[in-house]
Length: 263
Length: 246
Ligand SMILES: Nc1ncnc2c1ncn2[C@@H]1O[C@H](COP(=O)(O)OP(=O)(O)O)[C@@H](O)[C@H]1O
Ligand SMILES: [Mg+2]
Image (cartoon, rainbow over all chains, first blue to last red; front, side, top):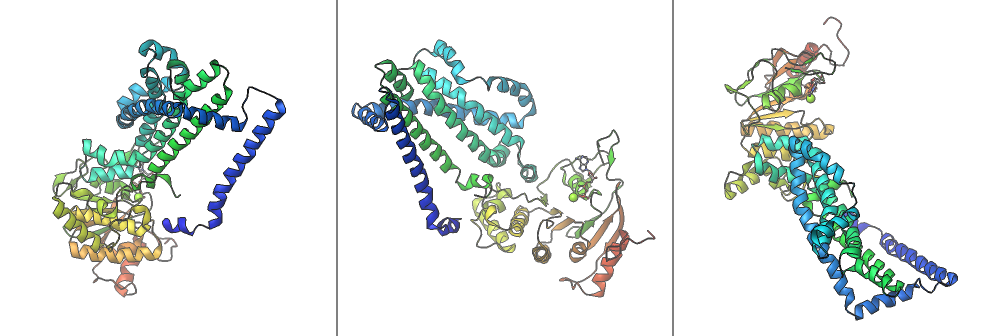
């Protein structure tokens, strides 16, 4: 594996860095030119967005808002993992549980978490609990469904080998079913984290007074500060990227790497 | 033994199959593809419930899988999330850590995988993965190994080497081996006795004892005679053409 990585031609890594940078440069130049050409004095030019981010940092809001958003995602998402993984494993294994609960899950799943915002405010008020609940809702379904499918599609030969060695009950779950399902569960977790990050912004625009979603809404309402609006968008994109890269790192562990084919 | 079948008619797979295997014996089962060899092995292993009659191994009814009878699967049942040594030690959770380590070391060495203890299955070749599975079965101290075309997915040379090593291991371990294959040459190279099955609904139509010293010389008259006898029983000559009068 490492042999392949190091023997990769030098040109390819340089290219992998140079091409995205080139795209970014073209995009930023185009953006700048378009704003100048349109004569808009509301929509910010790229450097004004950079200034906006600097301003946020100086006012201490940058760290505060990013941390506030991450705090909510961490709670909502962790709860979703704690509930979704065991629930999905049980649904995938016990047919009656699947028959009883799967229709309910399939009905709840297409309801956008945004549609739950009024309900969440009614139940939890305008506090951290409401967005945490929304993030939980948004991420628990992809995690549950992926864990369920992973168990249902598990290679039968692993199960048979395990039973052959006399494994039943909890040891069977812990030593074979969970590890066999783990790669697919991790993929579900990655998707769920992406969704959670989408939802935190929406939730913060309505339910709370801090976070990147709140920043966007507040900047628009208080004086049409579109430089800060776009700054907020850029920050959301960057943090989302970092989150995804972190989960992708998990996919490299030996205990799951077998599940992702040849890479 | 029959399966539900698609059009109301159940598929009768096995009928009146009875045979004896002595402890420590190496028995091969050959038969045409689809005749029910896997079904037979699975019923004996406790993975399939017979529809009629009863199945007894060592005098006791087979009610389910048993750690005393370990399967080696054609599609390879080695756990890809465990290293070689973790796989080999898989069936040993009741043993002390020291005994486990000792047995793992012994059997990893026996199947020729010393130096690969910390490797993951995806880093091994198909033949090596099959060796891991055999070591896992041996380490668990199964009395019987049930092998269902375990070398079927391997290339020709690897298969030859695996056969030779399996015979060596069997001689050292004195396990009872029930080995299913559709490859007549393989059966004659390995077995003390070859059971020949008929087409569906399958029964055992003949037993051919292979009383040749090991390692076997594949050009010796005894080997060739036994091979041709089985070909004939299955209605073919050694060149693959069907014999008219059967
Ligand atoms: N689960 C099943 N349901 C219905 N038919 C089956 C099932 N498993 C096997 N069969 C049928 O039983 C016959 C014997 O299968 P098998 O034991 O796998 O044959 P072999 O291993 O000798 O090639 C085949 O005709 C196959 O189609
Ligand atoms: Mg078969």
